[in-house]
Image (cartoon, rainbow, N blue to C red; front, side, top):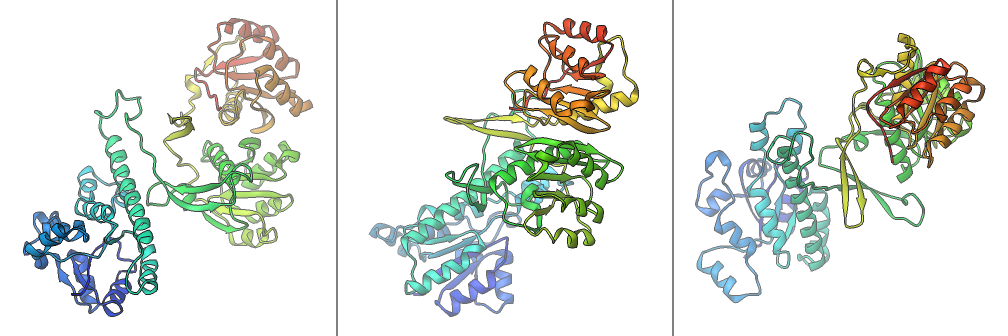
Length: 518
């Protein structure tokens, strides 16, 4: 008797070529349901509809098609057990040797901005996961394929093994299948969790169960260091974020490139309107600036610390034009990302063929949560995406900031938010002049930032991601020429810092929110 294959796919990529090879090269009989059966029939291939094979029509508008003993018995039967074979024969059930199934496009559906809950629910596949799980469980006796990328490998397997498949191939296919259904279920659970008040303890809490799943997008040369293996994973089946970026030129992205690119994206996302540029080294900004044009913004960011900018990661919030491209080619850079790149700019950048140039139209959208692994588990927190609102800040000094000074403090505060704590940022004219990052004490960060800014501190502004526990840093800043400070406040010694600011005639503003970045 000819072998039997069940084909029921939402994604019909490669379907006809696979089915034709099964029939013409290896003598398979085909059974199929719904649109898949029609596609095979239209291609002139012999196919039996599932409803004809089971003797039971599709019901509930197609919700029930393959959930039938003649289907699942043929899949789950253990061919080495006489009693299972007897059950098949007594119930006129044919063993199924191949199951080709992929699932309703749930993630593609919920990616639509206007999707309704009932529309999403209808895209939750029931029969498909049941077929995949049953087939994967019984990989000792049959093969399951849920990704068109594996069709060619399956056909080659048949050719190399005289029309059969190896146990190793079937087990690999089963693993891929279980991973596929796990990711599918996770997407559904995540979607419903976001819409279910029952799943959360309160409006601000995270789900009681947090699942993380990804498909390897690319194997990386190594991780942070050459002795650390690394890979890039995409969450979900719909490309978004960096997986959706287009690389115009340059070498493959490294682990450190991607980490720094994400740090750059988070900073540039703070500036959606006015042209802005940031240059990143080891996840910290060595230069960030706003300008009247994107070329001016980049030049200001570069000149903020040209030494550190060498080998940096650049993010721009406006398309790369010819003037900006020319400036970018004047120094060695690892990566440049922007929402678009003009044709003339592409030609100019091509002269620096090794620099990685990426186009990511949406530089604003980022993850809702951040995840960090620890021994025995992982930590999850909501992303630090609080919208800065200066109208809610508190001016705590006698001296009041002018509207222009308040705008400068807002710029400094937005940048400081993305500097490793303890973080101090000195700015003027919407440009970073000095950055003190990741020091073990705030005094050290203040010293580094002021020394880097040097004589430019006269009339400059200072932001601190955490409060000042003593007034020493306020006095140091004022002595260097700082005219205004923005910080969260909240220290038991806030009064000391406020009194020092009043004594020295500088502005101090409390934001009421802290931005530690560990």
